[in-house]
Image (cartoon, one colour):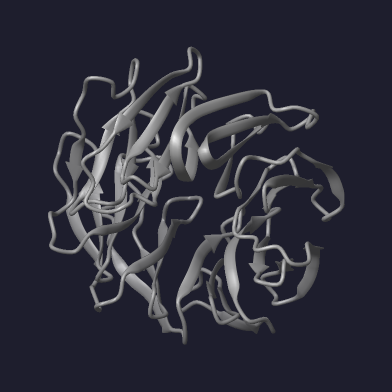
Length: 341
């Protein structure tokens, strides 16, 4: 980790042929997958040099990707398919929702997957079989998140967030209301707060115990990426000329200003990813630079990926925090060894 004897060194990089929509690690940390909008998937292990496998999905467009189970990945196509991809490159249909544009789905470690299909949430078992479907929301679901114990599903949409109990989809258990279009949602690690990115260039948050809501504004662009610090004390967001970290200790950011993390830049921040257990944030900018910065008392700004003129579109830490995967809109995929103390 920067600031210690552990090196920061590029491990590998690849040039793909299209916008990279996802850089995702499997849960066991053995492989990372990069998926392009054109249907290409690059699978890499963590050897030095990495062993790489490429997979071609026959579709007009891949939309999003996440992990599934211990080893596999789940990708969605514009035809409504969810496809399961193994590290060995095997592709199988996980589920199919004809005519649906599916870019909101989230897997649980318990084995189920919540999928946004139009205005409804469809709950699927780990083998893709149907568990249940919610009633319609007031608009198309923009993004989904799970509570830390995975007992509840949070759906962001126009007008706020709807919360559902995973074991009882007959009626919404809660509505977190605020006017406007909510584009992304996340839940704090202690289950005390939910936060959304909004169309109005703001972050909105609710204290879940008392339904108290808070607005966090001042962004240059729509903040589309959010990440909770390892200790749960900070919510780090994109959308500014540095990463913006809001304090969530005590009652949260009400009446408090944010910290700006990382170097100020003429380029705007497009991606933020907090380290899984250290007070460090990976910050990706819209010209491709990725920098590690500290949330702690000692300043830290370490470039790990050089800018190449195209925005950072995806990034993710390996589960053990030793490797950082990042990707850009013009198809550059990078894997960096960071190390740990």
